[in-house]
Length: 329
Image 1 (cartoon, helix red, strand yellow):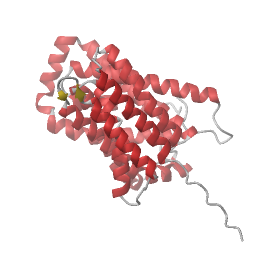
Image 2: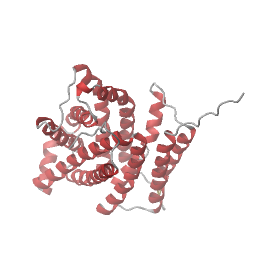
Image 3: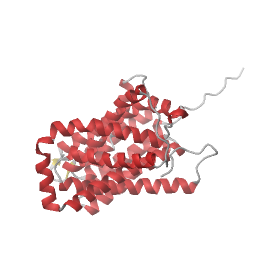
């Protein structure tokens, strides 16, 4: 895979952008499908999240070892600055894995549509404050309302998978913190050409740190029963089948993120955010079909409202204030 930074000679061609979006969407959709399949096989979901990151590490080492991509040239201080971001990336990834493992993929995606709410709060609380236009905050209420409606089941009232909701919310908060804390660090790394830190290498380094940060969670939460869970999964589903689903989910996770990073580097955060919102629709539909997840009327309407609100928030939050008219004498 080539470097994800845009060429200095000009903007990316429409064909290149189209290919990036298709690969991004396909990778993300297949990741969610195979991640759920792997999670259904082995009930050691922190381990699953860590194993998926290992696949990405192997991919990066191959790219660096063969010279297809320049090896990062980082100092100890650079790595230390990346650790908080890698920890947030670890929790964001693991939260998503755990949410889909204990609940429906479609429900996890609906809750993850609330990520802008967490990002807005983090943006205000952590300096420098990032104040959005009023319309953007109105859209946050729409998002929350949509997710709330999706949790109301006909004839049952509010019916929510609390565990899946909490894990998805953990992923949202971690992703918001990663965005807030990481923007200045990654921008500084990419601006120094001697460090060989284009968008692809930034993600590769964060992926390695993310894995290291995930290991303690595996040790403290699953290590005592990991061997038993692994043996049970192999007996029930077969070693090849288990490794295939873990390997494919890990590869798709790493690749779709690389394509997403490449697309954002070419078009900017606003367009990328809008398409990231549309991506959830495809994942919800695909997972509902593959895993036969029942989508009631309130779930469909609520998810549509939440995703629509996220789409509107992406546009409103980046809207430029109208230029003031020059005073006439």
